[in-house]
Length: 419
Image (cartoon, rainbow, N blue to C red; front, side, top):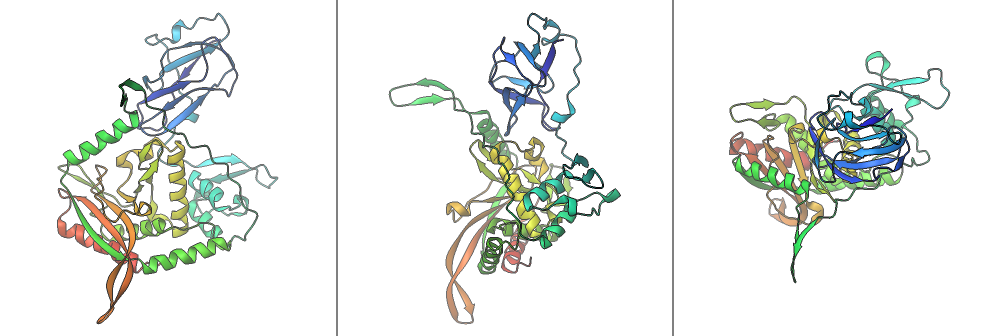
């Protein structure tokens, strides 16, 4: 019996996807597990595998077409079988396979344990499972503190602090998916006209709308980075010695300081909607990640619940997923984050004006560390490593005084960071 191949739904907020490339041709034999085609959402790309074996009887869309999710894309069956009932507009109902639906809210899942244990199934949240893999924690040794003995993120974090150094865990990382080569529309002796990729169009539209629909203003300030650099040096040594599982970076420490500042200034941890504002009780931190496909800003949910090691591990995992093109599309929605950090310090940028991800009310730009003269004690000056901070805020939502005090609190947290 012929079966349709549908366009998967990758995230609840995704309504359509762009068909990338066909890997099989009509009439070609297909085995279960073969890659049929690639497709992309706003900023992430995926590959769809065949769920059945047979012959690719028909394809209904061309490469580059925008296709509604759950729409029939192709049909697999036996040679000579009819596929008319699956064409666009035909009256048929196809239930989407649940494994292709990515929910924004983490679900509690159970998975099989290969080793022999007294209980062959372990209850663990997806977040805790990912953290355990990243931190090298054996989940079979954990006792869950969640409902019904479920293992949660806190259990993994606690275990990671006391776990002994073992053989390094080898995690296979998928090859990053590069942006497709732009289509050449025309050329002359000294130029080429190239089509703008879908992702660049989306970024351009978002940036234009942000500047057009908000009153953006940027304040600049510098923070003494000596303590943060000391902490970074300490964590780096502990990581090299195998005492900790995460190589905590300067950016991780800055994000940790930002989260603490947001807890003291909840009016910045908001989203602005003209005649109303949404105030959040949790910090969902957006992290700007430069990828081959373009700038992505995935959100780390409930970032305020994490220790510095947990935050470091989750930020690394989030940025890796973004670069590999397999991040949850719902986390790329600007409304998924309550505040964003964009760090250009590694590029040597000393000052810049980040653009807000609406409907968020502010974004922090982190600049490079530069030696600057500072009074060390009364009448004594010396060169001190100073980190540039650039806060862009929506003046419709925040007053200048509020924004300045918040930026000063970030500076204070960086200079007096306790982790």
